[in-house]
Length: 316
Image (cartoon, rainbow, N blue to C red):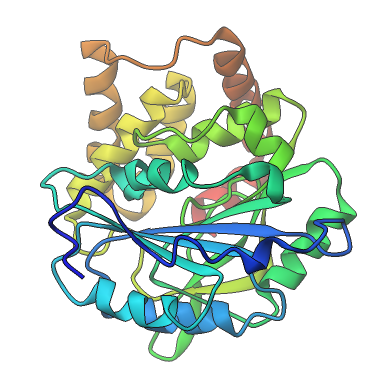
């Protein structure tokens, strides 16, 4: 198969036997999308961990966003043997949206979401326990207003699993799972940096809850930002704070917290925010979004004003 000669190459596009179940609450149906590029070192192990799930996705679209290594060859092998897996190959290109969200759009165009109860978006460098989907579905079942959820990312260092810290309300973009009704109300996924915060704020503004579950562990084989210089990572994070309408006072407090561990990273973070602020970069024009985002941050700041909480956030 020559994947570079056409705009879109589809592996097994007509296999639809997985769409025959009822889609009731006792048999929830999951659509999974994975954007990737040059992931030959990671993707096979990730595929095996999905195949081994107690509750498999009804459909899994893997979008190869112009890989130049053996990624597509590896995926095709599994695509040919498992009907629920489909491969889309996009032509090679020099520019790629953050996190592959541009590739996600191609996959969404191929899905009829009305046939599914949940939509998941996973990176290709993750490893899941076999009960991952089963446990996550139980959380959704127990909380009808849970709109976005996911496990927590852990990296392995010297044989020890270490949590990649994130607030409980924030589900990392690498492993988000959406209740379909919630996702439809979001109006799709953004393609700019900060998209995984934007969708959560929209979810809150529509009455949904979001939660990252620390007791559901997912191994992140390539730590967030690996391969990028720290200054670039924190600059972009600062820019994302501006694009998602973070209050300047909140950003300042976050900078102070970062400075405890790394003054250099803190400077890059605040510079990324300040540069975007001074140049008036384009961001969402949605007053309800802005109000929801800043009210949530205000609640966190009031919590920080408690001396015991302040000590914990800075030094734990």
